[in-house]
Length: 574
Ligand code: PLP
Image (cartoon, rainbow, N blue to C red; front, side):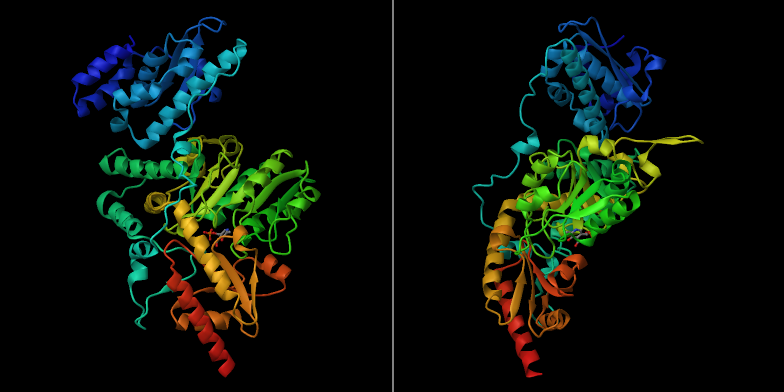
């Protein structure tokens, strides 16, 4: 016999925490038999760690027909959760189900304490399935699409972009141990290469240490104490990142080794399925090789054409010419949120709007934009977004691939084995639902957890404040650099760029300049910055780049200018 919700509440209230967990394991014992013919892929709930099938028995076709939830799982704890869902929803009409506050039930039962974050995602998947069935029923009865109440908590928690508190860069800098250690020269490091990799605040370093020293275990493997803790931290990080990007669900966040692998996963896993001979792939000449070569290779392999959106003379996307290259054959638009060479910030929302009209899938390389500009995947309506942890004050070896649920559904995994497996038979295999489907083998667990800490650090510091601070330093640096004789600065004005400034000085090879800057303890990058097509387009083989982050100060810009002065004098003397 199934318990009623009141009976469950009563029992729970009388038990201590440990007995509540045991009770949850027994709660599913009274579930009715699930029909064998219902164990189909269609009835499977995605996002669950274990196998779960869920259907609704609706007594009648009218709008007021009551629902009975019938579900089963191979896990006892999930069967217990099913019993709670059934007790909550059974007997209710579709409309009542849609209006029912199921989170209040979970809250009252303190489920948070009893189930791992991964299980919470699975529970959310079951709730979503029930809500979908209720919506489908209303549509079938002609009751129309019900109103969705409230805004996503992620939208509610976005920073107020109008009243931005200023940063105190000295305070920020003190949180980065590597920037507080003096060089052998006695000078502090002036780090101007954050576009390559940002430095890490103490809290990120500490988090990695905490995991290693206190509860390291593989993720999604053990249900012993370390295993549960690691899962909680790992999935907690995923949830933090989902909120940061305003993704609808943590299930839309896939951990990857970084931007490059993330884009290759999309180009191979999604592109090979959806790009065909005669199709077009649209990108720009300002892309990092990571967002250029995978598409170039895909186009060659599939017999598609790679097209480029023309740029304005100052290095922006020429929106007036977009229609000349975007059309119904454009299957993919692959574009960077911010150029790692020109610093250009691209008008992603406008590009997506116009791509949408052509049915084009939009892939945004957020490696440079996500760490510096507030990103909202829902408001921007992005299909895919990728970024790397190490450019966002986090560890190397971990990155994120965000995908709309339907895009992740239609994307194939390209690496097989481990947690991504649902079932392996001799003749074929099937995959878990996203995000697990794309997380094969042992993940960079410690790094993924510490990336969550890095994101929290950015949120606490205020991404809007960081952006504002970087913009004012960029303005100052541009003004000062423009006074250097023989300098060419690439890219647009400050209104259209982020904190990346790339330049050449007549008569000075970028490599020589970088070496001389380093003599003054200023770290700047030289070379083609993985943008060879852009360098060829600009008619240069190499440039010097300085890039800013939250910890840079006005003094850093002064030090850069002094170091350039020193380089000029040194080279002129020769
Ligand atoms: N895309 C852009 C715009 C970048 O700046 C970079 C790195 O510099 C990448 C992609 C590649 O990132 P990763 O090396 O972390 O894969």
